[in-house]
Length: 336
Image (tube, rainbow, N blue to C red):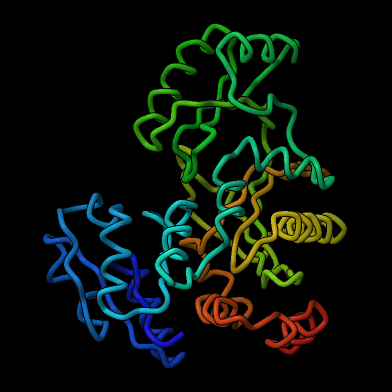
C-alpha cells in the first residue's frame, strides 16, 4: 500500500489523512464542486473533483473509483457514512485493483441487512430481542404486537437502516399502523428500501456498544465498550468509555459475544457491535461495519490509533503481528 484515496470529506477525511501520513502513505482527496475550498482538500498531496455537488457527489461510486485509478492509488479508505458500508462499492474497489480499507463485501452484506445480522447473532448464541426476523408486513407486525400481551411495546426498524433513521417505538396498538407507514416512508427515502422488521421494545435498557478489531485471518479482539444511552430521537449525544456500573460478568459476556459475532462474519478491520443491557441480561441490536464517529472515545481510553490499525490490517498484518492479543491488550491497559 503506497497511495491512498480518501473517499470522504470534512473531519474524518482530515483524520485519515493525518494518520496515513504517519503511516508513510501519499493521500488523494476527492471533493464536490461546493467543497473545493474545504480543508480536507488541502490536507492531501493531490485532489480530484467529483461530478456534482453535495452528498450526491461522494455517493457516486464509479466516479470515486475512477478518481483513485486515475491518480494511481492502490488503496481506498471510505471513512464513515457515504459509501463506507456499501458491499457493491467494496466489490468495485477490488475489481479495480484497490485495497478497500474496511470489511469484506460479504460482511458488509450481512451487517447492512439488520434482519440478516439478527439471524447471524442468533446462530452463534448471541441473545437478540424477541422479534420477527426478515421483512415484516403490517399484518405480521400487528400479530407480533398482539402476541406480546398487556403492556406491549415494540420498535419498528428499517432492514437497511442505521444511524437512528427508519426507527420508531410504538407503545400503543392503535398507533402501530401510522407508525409503520411513517417508518416505511422514512426508510425508503433514507436507504432506498422501505422494508421493516419489528422487535420487542426493552424499556429502560442501556445502550452499550463494543469496539471490535479483526484481521480477516481468524483473529478478533474487543477493545472494550462504550455507553451511548443518552440520546435524542435515537441519535447519540454522549459517549462514555467504559460503560459505568456494568457488572464484570456482563461486561465480559458482551465482549465475548461481540468477538464471536465478528468471527462468525469473517470480519476484517474495525467495527462496533451494539447491545441493549438490562440488569444482568443483554440483547444484540446491530453491528456497524465501519469506523464510527465515536471511535475517538475508544482511542482516548486505550491509546490505540484505530485508523492506523485499519491500515495495518488492510496491508495484510495479523493481530498477532501487531501484538494485539487479548493478553497484551489487558497488560497495556493495566499500565495506563
